[in-house]
Length: 209
Image (tube, rainbow, N blue to C red; front, top):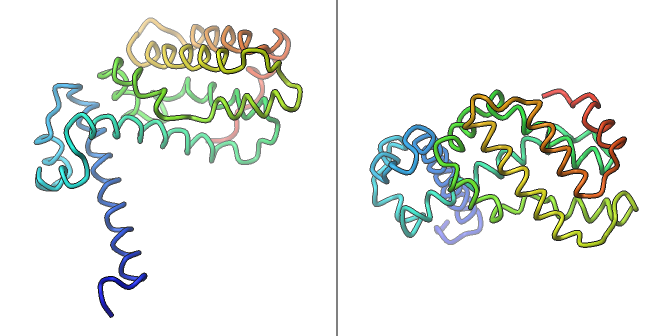
């Protein structure tokens, strides 16, 4: 059987994907410890691979670091999605991940340190990750849960609020969960939720994690 068979091609593809995922995890760990002072050499040492291997996956250091940030965001989103499998209410599915965000330092310490050491890079990575907020809002708008007026603008403002709230949580020891909850509540008002609906959504039991 030649290497070009579908079976071998699939195995090779899976092998490359596993290596890339391991490389991104190592990069996240190094960035969480060293911030933007991290080097490709440090990443290679942590991943136990040659520097040349890194450049087979990424054009340069900047591309590697950006991919590591986006991967961390998407991994966290995947985790929140798994936590919400039993939730069917569109409003709850929108708000619960925002509330789970308050637990990031506890549930995802490497991610929290990644943000703490690299807040500007995190701020720049979030819009590139497409975390599904717009689609969630679109579903709510279609069902009449919120107004469709300037929905894209309101979604952009919500992303900014969530991003800065996450940075504050991870970098400011004086920033409390109550402060974060207030920021999220204000963002939900901008989205078009009533005060009563916000109080209700923010007080519902979270799914087990």
